[in-house]
Length: 251
Image 1 (cartoon, rainbow, N blue to C red):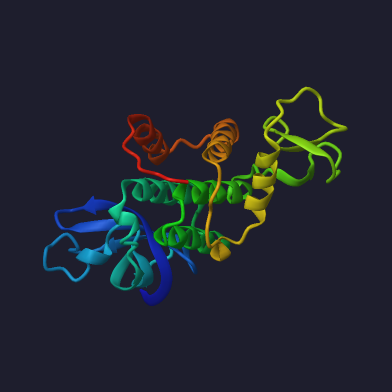
Image 2: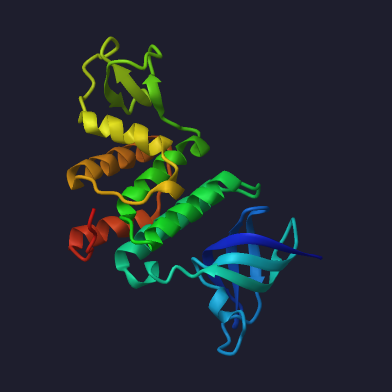
């Protein structure tokens, strides 16, 4: 087998045999692949600390295109230690990892890879994870085959006098085409447009009204439920910690 090196991040891990793990690694060059980390569960293993979710860096491995690759070592770029110190951040990071795992297949998805890493890095810097997760969820919709039309009216193509967004039609509705759809806050229309256009790497601060961010989240939840068919355990966990008041999240 060929020895290769690729930037990657561990999306999930499963115990294998008495001492090993099978890692699902999203790599920039090879897409999503399975990598066997032999003996990593042993206390003295050099692979122990680099065989857990969220580890991001250069993965060196014996590459098996149609099977299970084997890990040699990882040059770690980021362990996301700040994220791991907060239940909120962990919950949102797990959501991002699980959603990415549902989206990406075996092919390389470098744009998605960069978006995921940039989003996690911003959470690591202390920027609100809820809004960053909303931005991520919005941007990946085209990869799920159900992208929203956010630059013009979905009915007539006009970019003027946008009054609402319609889940049924999948995009903005202008005043001329409005037909008794539910009117949303104009600030939400603006936020949706800006969120699709923003370069996550360039975000320095997010200070937004909590009600508006909640409205954004609710819209995305409804849209995902209607069009993607994706059910995520991490999303359920997020909702539960909010209901139980465990979260310390601030917008």
